[in-house]
Length: 379
Ligand SMILES: Cc1cc2nc3c(=O)[nH]c(=O)nc-3n(C[C@H](O)[C@H](O)[C@H](O)COP(=O)(O)OP(=O)(O)OC[C@H]3O[C@@H](n4cnc5c(N)ncnc54)[C@H](O)[C@@H]3O)c2cc1C
Image 1: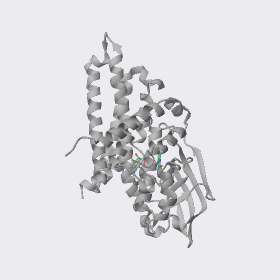
Image 2: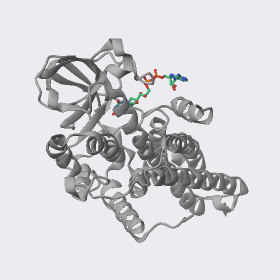
Image 3: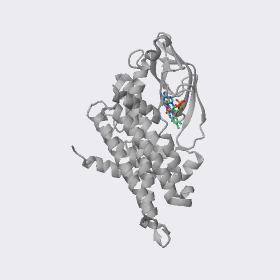
Image 4: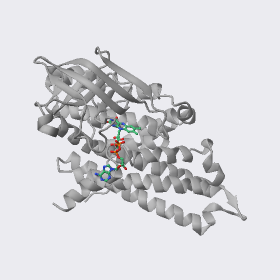
């Protein structure tokens, strides 16, 4: 067993930490308040290779492992989860799926620009009536011979208006239930494809969340990923890896709030002492530190299993469940440690608390993670 990060991991951690401080921190409060998408920051992340971190250099990626990805997600999320979700979706829900299951032509056409950060991707599974129960897809993709005719609505799509490449799950043969679902690559600008207004959200307000509408969109057959009917398996397989990204995002939100709390506790005076001298505060910090360390180990373990080609579905769900619950508990306590100052925007912890909530909801709610874990436990 090896608990040390490699030289490469330490270097990438430092690079992500520096980026978060110099590029993400300035303006993070304003972007949150005005729901401004971090366009410049995402562009720079693309230039630095963070948007195709795990993609092979052959397809324009950085060829790093999943542990590096977890480290980067933690560091960026300590400061700005609205930006880190773009990194997560592009890397694990779009690039990973295309590299693993796409044809050579799809990789050349779609993966290369996504991995190089020239384009952004979106993953479109959720619908107004299909969230946790992703099998009940109402969006249809009728087989017309050389193309599919796509009709329906997708909900809550991250990168909804900024993406150029959309992987859309749709039902081709309802009689086959989830085995009749296909994953299709849809390009921005295709006739009949429209984007709804941006959602006004509680947290990750800078991220770009929209509904998408498809009316008789002609999607060429060569844009289908995998065999006919592979779409649901494709979605579940990519979400497994995605959960490592969101678990690491939750970890980052928690550790960001914790670090701010430690610093604040050392500075703030009450009753002639610093907060850090009070045992009630010390114990809160001790609990935060312990849970964060446990969450980090779960994230790294899931990433390690993935890197080593071992099954990691249960490990990824455990990491996401625990890290997201830790993020929620930790950020609530961070606001408490900051007192009234925690309740205002300048101190960052209220934003981290709002941002933490989404990690318990997207890419499978905490309840869905418990279903995945218990299914494995009871096998
Ligand atoms: C900001 C944001 C960004 C998102 N980005 C994307 C994206 O890029 N792509 C995409 O496809 N989707 C995205 N989503 C959608 C997200 O994945 C879904 O919201 C999530 O899966 C939950 O689905 P739902 O909202 O329909 O809730 P529901 O499925 O209706 O669940 C409601 C509640 O019931 C619980 N529940 C449901 N079924 C069960 C069960 N069997 N057992 C126990 N409890 C259950 C849930 O845990 C939850 O607490 C995003 C959502 C948000 C808010």
